[in-house]
Amino acid sequence: MLYQNITIVAAFLLFYSLFAGRFEARLINGPLMFLLAGFLLGPQVLSILTPQINGAGMRVLAELTLAIVLFTDAANANLSVLRANRAIPLRLLLIGLPLTLLAGWGFGALIFPDMPWLEIAILSTILAPTDAALGKAVVSNPQVAAPIREGLNVESGLNDGICVPVLFILLALLAPLEAHNNTVLFSLELIVEEIGLGALIGIALALLTIALITFTDSKGWQMRMWRQLTMPGLALLSFSTAQWLGGSGFIAAFVCGLVVGKKLLQNKHEYLFSNEGYGELLSVIVWLFFGAVIINMATPYLSWQTWLYAIASLTLLRIVPVWLSLLGTGLSAEEKLFVGWFGPRGLASIVFVVIALQYPLIAKSTIGATVICTILLSVILHGVTANPWVARFATKNQG
Image (cartoon, rainbow, N blue to C red):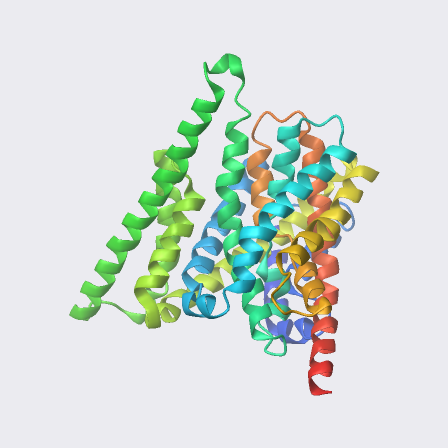
């Protein structure tokens, strides 16, 4: 069964890599194709793909994938473009994101009256970050206005890093009073340890690696073949070191990427190119397993409340905060709606829910099912609406 599973995954990777341009020019993107393939080939339909992966294995795979993606997004953040078009991303991150978190908590309190308020806040945080990979037809298409394109790209690259400490704060507050004399003090200590230590490790490893790159390059000791492993190795090293020493690996990877991107400047794309490839490979494997394994696990816990929250999360709870945050920017009503709609949920939400489910949550099954519903709808709806809406903008611009 092991080699059968590997054969199927490898064959599908090969097939999609050859026809990716054809698929993604239409209504199907990579995550949607791999999710559908996992679902059809998995136990629920054909039972050809039967990966024997448990919760711990899925968590490791998802965590390593997000670590590389966080590092790459942070390193690729174009600070000069951000400064030139800072109004939209800053409003989305500083106004839209907090409003989205609050809206998700308030709506959850309405439809999940029996769920503890802290767990509703955790659910809202899990579903707050967006995924640029699901909206590549938007963020990489020059037919979309540059301020909108860069705003969405920067938002999706940074909001998962911002949500990491929020999630850890909420999870730390789950500690029962009887286990600690002062839960709030314990939570603050944990937060400082995880965030502070993670940031310090990320900065230290980034500066050390940059110094080594400069030294070895000046000596001519580097080889082009091996250079492509430098940044993936650094991303995983920063993540795993922080996790090992008690810090947050995600904070470490994110901060490390920011420092590397600032220090490497014009040379960063040469070093980061392979990171994008490794991140893409791991991401599609996560999507394949998501379709084959995770959806099947959540099916018994689906309810009208989980679907309602999922629909609201992708529409009302995202679009209204974004609309409010963009007031005064000069964007048209359609452009505000466009930015609000293209907030797809993906990899970060998968990792966050896998982490959260390791904690003693009362509404564990409801939270898991709601997140899976939201991601499933997002992959489908954002995948099929991206190209048509971009084409509409192109037609309007030509007219």
